[in-house]
Image 1 (tube, helix red, strand yellow):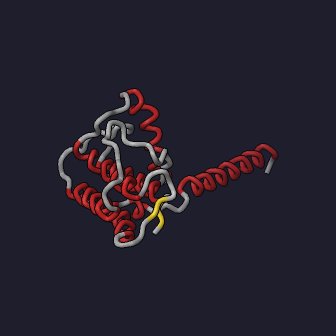
Image 2 (tube, one colour):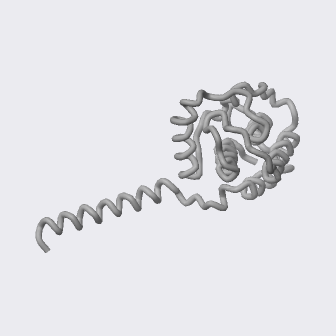
Image 3 (tube, one colour):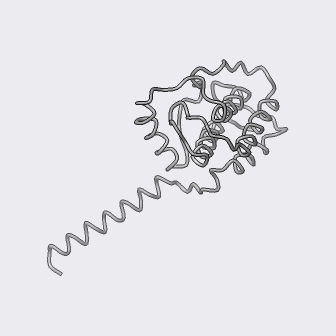
Length: 176
């Protein structure tokens, strides 16, 4: 093997190793079956009847109501939207990264634009039931879904992933 061939093989091998490592880091062991409403419901069902606390700025009631709002708005329509330019650029890119990674990070005390204030005055169990119902309703929903306020138009499968990774991000602040 001459020097030129050796450099090509070495560079190709290094690139393959980097790509493989990047792929592993990017996906971090997230399985497609973990990004379903059914998987999210198992997590929520496990919280039912438990003493649930939050380590964040929002109490558990506010968190569950916020997540329920998001699911409900995917069917009824979000009250306010980012610009079309935003949705078609930064919003699209953000959803692509989040869905590819199987997880998201966002401001965990940021309300949905235009959504009613979440006072968190109901009980945790009432808010949890609202979220569970919203997810059940979403699974049964057959009509056209409404555009996401930041991501734009999503298919039902994309919305399912969006709802689950959104919930999972908020559950990082929940303990029972």
